[in-house]
Image (cartoon, rainbow, N blue to C red; front, top):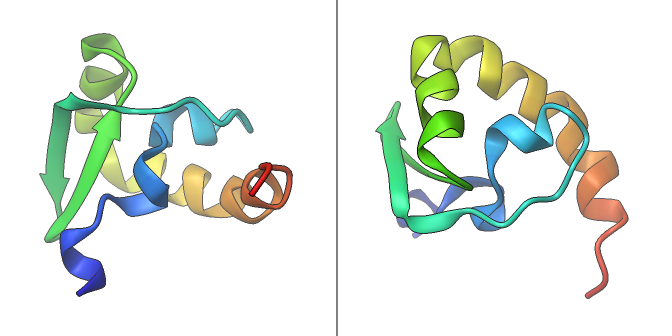
Length: 72
């Protein structure tokens, strides 16, 4: 099920909020709202955990444009 997959395809949601596709590290993660998120580094994880609602909102807004620019 989708709930077990890393959200945003494993890309760092903090970077996505800035419009960048940065691969997350599966060793640096957090679960928020029953969803798994991977982060590029611990600093990004800390920024996310400080205000996950805002980080998710920003990532959700940028995700369609970012994913559209990825090479399949």
